[in-house]
Length: 161
Image (cartoon, rainbow, N blue to C red; front, side):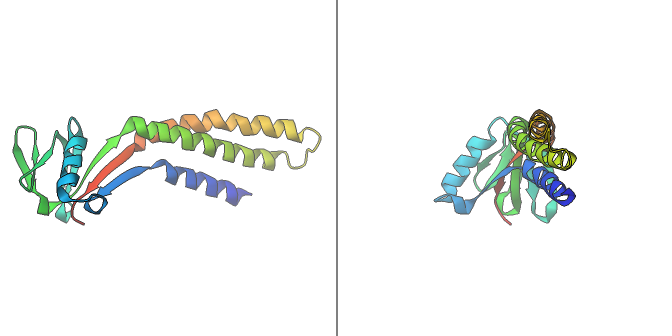
């Protein structure tokens, strides 16, 4: 029983870190991929990961032009051959996913706990189990919202692996 509770808790934390990864292979052409990226990166502060794992953080309004990536003011950051990926973290969407995953995880954990606590008391078992199981939903949702806000929902555009 303890192992099941531990497994559910670990899986809920793993599932809370959601992301969306887009690569050139997902699009019919590079031009469409670059256009989609430029629409995505407009008005966002993004992190750029270059080859050799150097990181350029909080770049505002980046765009792809002439096989290079530029920041606001047409400052050339790097050629696309050196660019590994561009990422952006959306905290609101992360909180919404955290709410959902936290509520379901809270229900699963509290249901497991209720079965474990009331296994010898059979006369009040069904009503107490229900109350304990339902009480885990709001607690799990609150924890999920906080965890989702911290971890965020990552959008990643991969260029060169």
